[in-house]
Length: 428
Ligand code: SAH
Ligand code: SF4
Image 1 (cartoon, protein in one colour):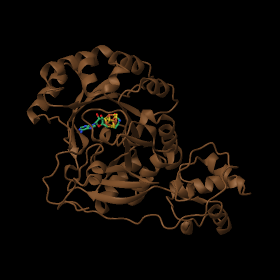
Image 2 (cartoon, protein in one colour; image 1 turned 135 degrees about the vertical axis):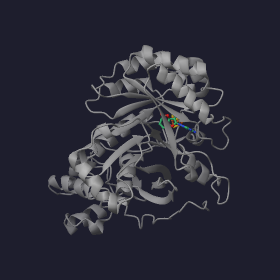
Image 3 (cartoon, helix red, strand yellow; image 1 turned 60 degrees about the horizontal axis):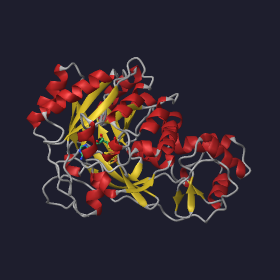
Image 4 (cartoon, rainbow, N blue to C red; image 1 turned 45 degrees about the horizontal axis):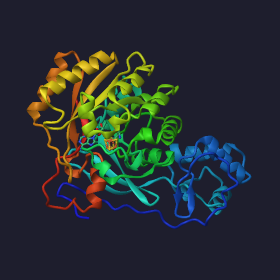
C-alpha cells in the first residue's frame, strides 16, 4: 500500500512460528481466549484464569499473578523475556499450546499533528486503534492531575513530545448497527473482539510509546470500530483487566454507544464503570431513524429513560455526541429541539458536536464551519455545555472505520487528495 507524503508506514513483524495444538478441553477458566495460529492466547485472562491455567499444569496458583504481571504490567509478549517465570514452566505452557498472544501492531500511520493510527492484527483480522497525544477524543475527562502526574508532565516534556494522551479502542471487527453516515457500518459485523483483543490494543500502544502508567496521564475512549454494548461482556471484562491489571482508572475511560437500551440498563448496575457517551446525532425520532436505524428498536424516549436510571457521581457528566450532517441534522431548529430535549431530560449532560467526516460511498455533506459555530451558539444560549470536537489525523484517514476501509479497498493512495476525515479531539 502506498501512503501520502505526510504519512509513515511501518510494517511491523508478524507473530513468528506457531505452537503445537493443545488439548485444552480440561481447562476450566471460564474465559474466552483468542486462537493464535494453533495456540491459545494467555493475554486476556484474568489473574484467576491464569492461576487456573498454571494449576492445570501442576504449578502453584501464585504463578497466575506472576503471569499477569508479565503480560499486563511489564507488557512482555515473548517467552524469552519472561524471566520472572521459571524456564520449565514456560516450556510446559508452550507445550500445552499456550502463547503470550497479545495483539500486535502490524502497520502504523503518523499524522502531521502527532496522531498515530495503527492496524492491529488479532487472529485473522485487523482492527484499528488510535493514539492521540495531548488530545482527548471524547467527553472531557476532567479529573484533576495528581502531583506525580504534574511533576512527570514537566519531567517528560523535555524527552517526549507528549504530556498526556488518549487511546481510541475498537470493540468489534466492523459493526452491525448500520448508521448511515459511518464507514465502519459498511464493513458489516465480522465478529466480536474478546476481552484480550480489546485490552491488548491498549497494551500494545502503551508499549509502543513506553508509557509509564503511574506517571503519564492516559485516557481511553471506546470509540473505535464497533458497538461496545453489543459485545457487552467482553467489553466489560476488558475494562476490568485494564483497571485491575494495567492500572488505568475507570474515570479515565469513556465508552460510546449508539443506544443499546438493555446494555445501558446493565451498565447502570455496574459497581465500577467508565464514563458514558451516547451517539444521539439527531434531535427527534424521525431524523434519528433516518440516520440511525437502531432508533426504531430503541427510540429516544426509551433511551433517555434508561439513562435516567444511571447513578451518576456528583461531578460526572454524560456526553451526548452529535454528528452534524449538512442539511440533515445541523439546522437552527435542530439545535433548538436538541436543546429542549437535553434540558427536559434532566440528565447531567453535555454535548459534543462533531462535524461529519466524509468517507467514500456515503452520500452526506460536511457542515460549514460557520454553521457548526451557530449550532453551538444556539445550545450555549440555552445553557447547555457544548463543545466542538476538532478533527485529528485528517491526513491518515482517521475517521471511525476509515483507515481499515480505505486500506482494504485501496482508496489510500499516495498523491490522492487528502480525505477530510479525522479522529476528533474536543476543542474547549
Ligand atoms: N458504536 C459506537 C462507538 C463507535 S462510533 C457509537 O456509535 O457510539 C464513535 C462515534 O463516531 C459516534 O459518536 C459516531 O456517531 C461517530 N461517527 C461515526 N462515523 C462518523 C463520521 N463519518 N464522522 C463523524 N463522526 C462519526
Ligand atoms: Fe456502529 Fe457506531 Fe458506526 Fe453506528 S456509528 S455503525 S454504532 S460504529
